[in-house]
Length: 214
Length: 383
Image 1: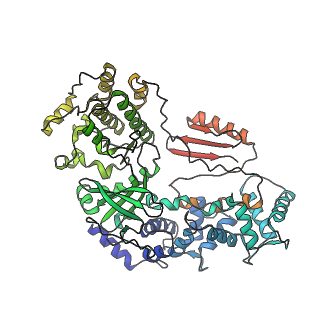
Image 2: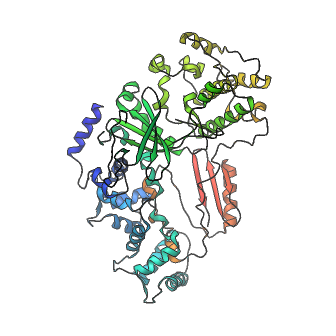
Image 3: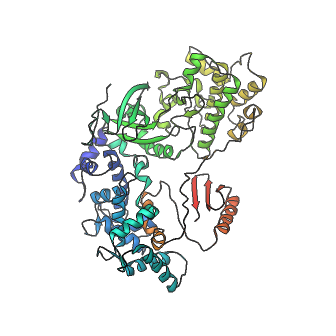
């Protein structure tokens, strides 16, 4: 027991940059304090896999997703960018928890929808433009071995624009996006991680060194 | 509220009696050497749960290896999903305590029923025993052994028709009665279910040990008393060690024979789970073959996709699938293929046959194939 206390009081003095009190994070997210302690175990693992500084660097993020730290993937880049709320090139613990909370099964759909819209709005203009959509379809197809022709990609993009861009201004605004999501909720499937409901079971070592007071 | 300090971490919850602002604790259901079990209600869903509360200090004193094992064991328990195994929902902790939120089984311990109403008929004994073996076989197929099957761990639901085994995979938290730790005599529990090879302190095989304990359980169900019993613990050990027990007159010859195969003191010749499910006594009365696999997959996830628009397509990017961050706790791989669903399904089945995996194909038109192997579950969805 004493050993745990010691270990923790040591740790407490040198929490890395960006560390936040689980109590505070719990009050702002659907997670309990224990779930945040469990997520911290995951965060420690991810943030020390290449550079041992308690921050998740892009390479570490890619390594976790693809087992390959130099993987080129447009969508992973976008997710990283969205997680890095301060836009300083690394994901801190607080950013990690707050961003993951959007993927919690209990988080309202409109938050998930809005996150996804921003993620797809590659240029950050407030619209998903036709060329952005085309770039993303191209990126997805290059992940697979489906060698679809340029015309084929163009046809998919065109068909989607006809379906979604209801005011026909050549770009998808957030209202049109919401309508699409309402019609086709499976588009948000990536935005819910069932794992988040069982993080305490997936990363249970916090049970030994929890800092929650009795 | 007894002994537990009540915690609440969410300000919006006016119920200050709630554990972590989440579970409202009710009455004490049972208590052991290190644990107390309470009934509780999940405030969000209204669902009943059982909360097991462990005292870390006491637990670590009794079982110093806890720190090493607990993580692994919780992970194991998490992966067990079977109708006859009590489900672990969540673990929680404070500085001094560990809390397990588990499925609540309303009927209580099976053995309370026996001590109240006496032995069960052979048909009912068989029904419970089949469920016990179904759970045990499922776990063994995944390399998980209970090692501490005993009356307290066998629960029945309200209707009395379903048996559920608790504490599977959590042996570090429950095996206080292992002789090695010297605690055997101080416990309220009985060593009556312990296999002879454990008593002889030789290395033992978890599967064989569980089968022995199942044999003792079956004997108690059908006879109404313990096969090995003596007020003197040393005498009890001696009986176990020699395999000395007497079947009651009323027990059928077939059951006597079956019990003798389960309570074989030689672990090498003792019946195995695979043999149990083929035994004439076990299968009597038309028993559908036990599958040591999930009866149903997670299901419902096969979406009927009409026409893929660009966003559907994009959503298949592996870069958008963050489950990779949780690697090691269930991984799935998605792929796109140009082959027709039927062709793919065929390929999967062929591969599975070679690798001795179980495949469940969904109804035609849904294009889903589920596959399961020794070490867990592989699911493939074809769209």
